[in-house]
Image 1 (cartoon, rainbow, N blue to C red):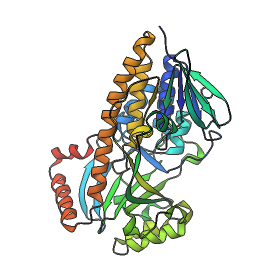
Image 2: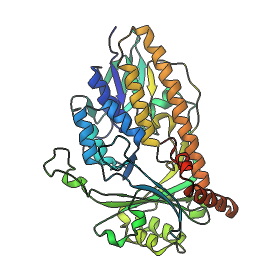
Image 3: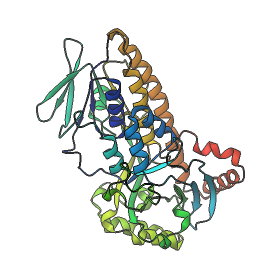
Length: 418
């Protein structure tokens, strides 16, 4: 009887959320992360913690850390607004929970800020500069993680939370692959040092914009206007108070006119590609692109995981992008990882005989697979809908969104699964 000892590979959103919950429950846990230090820059600009993610974080985090998170995230989003490329309204969904203390609030936050908060109190748990190589089975039924520096760590359970290119997954489930979708995303951010420069429509919350010929733009602001008591311990640090607008433009590789080695294209070239395809777009949108410094523009190939069926459960498991990596068009990837983390934390925090651990893990994996790949399917459906090159299909999508805009009871369909 007792808590199983746990190794977590990867100090991303899901892995750190799980580590916080396990430590709080008294479960022996260690996290191993390949980044050299806690100050290593985190890839990506912003994510939105939905009600699903907030509930998972509140379940796992000590109250002090969760309260710190609520203070250091940006202003809660006011609405989700679908527009066309001329800034004509298609659908606007007002978000009811605008109080940053509400569990149901939509919380924009930079990835750097979220990681810093999730690392609070874990100095004795998280080990940096550890690149995972493989796992090995021990004769006593435990599992050992082997790292590139030659070090080894043994525990009752190993959790792969090491992202879309998971090495744990590649060994555990060698047939579980990620596939190219044929789409490329180009993203950047621009400082909001003068909000009057940008359309108010773009500053209220997540803003998906349907363009012509299969082009799509997503815009969202991160602002820190209402910070409450200036002496509050949870206030953002000086380098976390940046008010900015982030954007992501995507289209088929052929539409962008780029080859398979597009990763070599730098900021200036990426900016030119987007500007070339948006000459007919509203001037306010073109202004956002023009105001973005090339150094702040990055690109990536949009990929998706292939759906898997439950496997034979053992003392190695997965969570988040390590299994159900998805396109970003529903904004649920990080929230799905947090959902997994809360469920796995609940699974591992109980005290039961060793012979029941696998049974409980099997239940976790079934539920995680079902929930995660449902999110993958809805993200793929949104990707296809937003990027259709058929004028007829794009028109149908706009008619559907405008119809829902006039029928508030149907708006919940759009937000389902977040």
